[in-house]
Length: 523
Image (cartoon, rainbow, N blue to C red):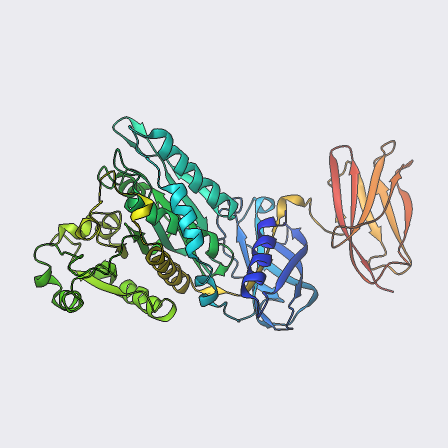
């Protein structure tokens, strides 16, 4: 079945990109020859600017959940510099796939024009962030405000689903209560098994609205997912709302322990932990004890600015230094008005416990690069873990800039593609060949290719009504009639003289049985 989400992605990306629309791929037909071990995919490729595309075929053997099957043996209109045109074909020679009719194939065409990341960043607005924080900052706790935390979990689920993401939940239980991790997955089109995570915890401490801690991170996750889901990327993205962070990083710990598929590599994590509190007042920023020993350059920078709480802290461990550098470069390139202070803690941060107090620490412990993006919590925000942590205390421009920074970094890391995609489920097919016996009778078509007329020869189905339908490759019904064979070999004629040259599909049905045959017309 052709993917409706693929069309939505294309239309959204075309509107967002503006200056260069993505190619459009339309799979018109797929043919399976199980005996020869081949799948023949027909597709049309169009591009508004007439650009050639790099075309790839991918296949899924798990119902479209992943496209990681071996498609190394391909030929035809596949590879680099494929010009736009109709009825292009790719032949896939597959090995040892007994359930080939359960496979899904997809064709990806990338014209090499990189989407504008700045255009993505600029879609984050203060008005939308203000609206979101008002809706998310409600009491939400597994025991004292269960309805609230369930409501925010539902908000995450609905947002991920509406964005066309693959939405899953991971059940997490703590102290007799169950609150799931909520996960939205955006599939990469080149390196699907290479994933970057954008996350925030969506619980709060009891008896607070938790605007900064951590509704600010949740709204940023929602907005980054909404915007980036409009585009295609080489690498995969996961957007996660973690549960039970306030109880000791329980949700993220369970995810790292049992939620990462064996086939997937987590290349980096952008964990948002309070990103909305800001102050230009001198001495509004304090520092944990010993910071001057670990981070003398950062402390000197903060001191030179009068200890103002006007920056985003970018916390990584030494193994995350490349990820930290990528984040800082993205900020400087796309959100230059956001002041950032990067930190690199040795090892897994045990030397600085205050820098391990969020979900990124579970990834550090597993050897996975991760950053904590934070306004420094109680070292800046006096409302931390109190009933005063309400939306009115947040700085919406700072929250907006911080969200833009995360979006820019995620886009850079995932590597945007100006690509068109279409999918096709092979379970639609009985199989295409000139001689096939899925019906309770023998079927032949002759001549094939045909000029003025095709003869349909039926044998062994006397007394059965055979329904015939002829389709073009776009699924339009061209002709059809009921056939009533009366002997061991009955012949019926099908006029094709008025049809354009090309490939057609003849479907013959008897009850629940059917046979699909390819008919070529060549005048």
